[in-house]
Amino acid sequence: MQMLRRPFQVGWAAVAALASSPAWAEGAAAAQDLSRYKEESVPGGNLMLIAYMILWALLGAYALRTALRQSRSERDLAALQDRLDRLTAHPEKAEK
Amino acid sequence: MSANTANLPTRLLAGLGAGTLLCIAALGWVFFVTPADENLGIVQKIFYFHVGTAFGMLLCLCAASAAALIDLMAPNDTIDAAGQACTEVGMVFALGVLTSGPLWARKSWGTWWTWEPRLTLTLLVLLIAIAVMVLRSMAAEAQTGRRIGNALAVLAAPVAYLIHIAVQKWGGTHPQVIQGGGIQSSDMRIAFWGSVLALLTLGFSLVALRMRGIRLEQRMAHLRLDLSALELQRARRGVSNDANAT
Amino acid sequence: MTMLRLTWLLLAKDVRIAARSREVLGFMLLFAMLCVVVFAFGFLREGQAAQDQVPGVLWVTLLFTGTVGLLRLFAPEEEAGNLDLVARTLSGTAPLFWSKAALQLLFSGIVTAFLLPIVAVFFDASLFGLEWIALALALGLIGQAALGTLAAALLAQVRLREALLPLVLYPLLAPLVLGGVKVTALALTRAPYSAFSGWIELMLAFDAVVVVLSPWLFARVTD
Image (cartoon, rainbow over all chains, first blue to last red; front, side, top):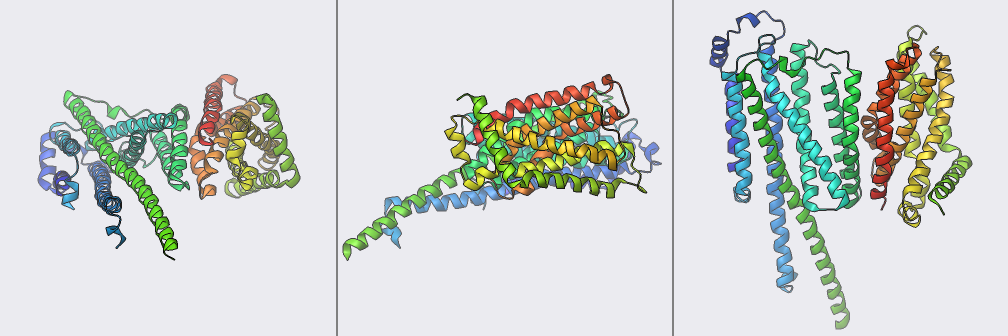
């Protein structure tokens, strides 16, 4: 699980950093001169951030759910296979 | 738990890692290199991943329909698993499109929702995908569910094309805003195609991941059948032994 | 026995069953009436109708009422538990499919004939003598019957079918409903054919697709 989760954690951290850092807003504004958008009534930047957060939340949640379900399936499968093996190999032992 | 996921094939992990890294790289490019749109401002940056998500949705759902057709003609567990995985990932992408679309529309068209052709098509296609999955899960037997889900998925492809034409004629008087407010520079072009590539890579590896899960579930169903057959056999033998003893 | 004759015999059988109980058609007619009344609650302002409500009321009522018929389409076979058996004995599912689709078309045709004057009176619209509305209605009902018969067959093997049929049917029927509403609206304003020819063509294309694909898929799910 660890191996799988790490890339997503990194991704999350990146998005969270982008979202929260005031330095980012300043940097972006300085780099791209966004001053003329300041008067706009609809806060486009917030909408965009929400959109990106929802998108990554969706993808991350799906990946996580799939991975968790899969590890459960693997456990169940191993248990089943084990029972089946014991049943076929040593039928008398499996009686207990 | 870590012992279990260590079983994930390296190729799969590599794919997921590559998809995630590409997405981070594309995000970095979109936010730190690409200039803001001249007319729409910062909100236009939704466009790069919004369109990539829409591409992913279309690819996944087309593939799901194709897989359904193949599986209907010649049943094949792998193809069926691929079809199911594509349907699921396509639905996740569709949800992404349907949330980022209105957020963008709020800014650029001044309203949360318009019956703009592409949004309408996405909504209807998502509803059809939901119908396919629900139909499948509601059948009394797994094999019946598989057949009827496939039948609906096959029908959905040409009908979705007609829906596409219909909603375009229907919303036809609407101003055609998209094409991102226009890609204005080569940085924007790189950001756009980079995001598309990143999302498709991620989507593809998610499909592969889910497919593996479905294959496991299929194998489990087979094993359960074997096991219950064996146990039945044993129970019968036990009964006949008892009968002999008495 | 030719396929056509088989289809005819099956249809005659279903019509006889329906005539004996009179349940399905009667309920469809009643339901259509109720829909119109409920739409009047929702859309009429001070007892007056606006012309642009008429197409929507007409087509949505037909969509809803069609669902009622489709839910009972395979009821005789289901109650006897022999849908698979019927399909198999006929050496091919085509007659079964076409007889059911024809039955649905017959019922919804009767409902439409009953509905038009009601909508015309209640919503104060002159729906008659407009051949393009009649054509659009025919195309819509044919498409709904072909797609709906397949959907009903898919759902015959599923739990919670009353809830699921709309989920399967309504999104897929979007081109027909959109086209029907547009053609009706334009024809009511006496627009020339060229104003809505594209919609008629789209409805024709939809019908062609479902008339070919539905029986093919039907054969694969009733095997």
